Image 1 (cartoon, rainbow, N blue to C red):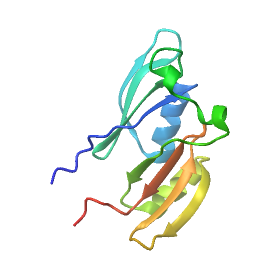
Image 2 (image 1 turned 45 degrees about the vertical axis):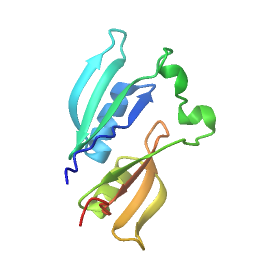
Image 3 (image 1 turned 90 degrees about the horizontal axis):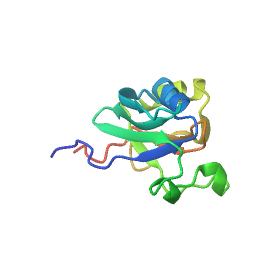
Image 4 (image 1 turned 180 degrees about the horizontal axis):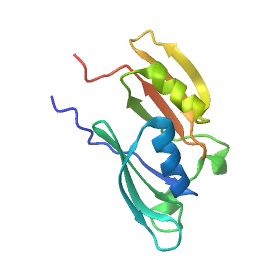
Length: 137
């Protein structure tokens, strides 16, 4: 079975350049492409992680952007969150914590297998990381 990601989360950040730097430092994403918008923001960026990807850009008032609320605009709540499979969840947790991620679900071994944790990035987006791989046989 091909485990290449076909679902790619898309996020908007007020300070997309800072978010890109932080996501790479804290979570281990790699910059695949970053396209500036000519006004100090990011028109589009692609960050890779293993076989998965995240696309992001700066918050802007356009047709797509009007459908997205930032977490602080809705009381910190989320309508979705990304789950990222990591090989060494404990090391990933420590890396994210050291970079200032706000831990909302502490690292724990899970009853259904593997380990995991959840955290918020600097702009309040919810992320879950774990060693449970639903693709593994």
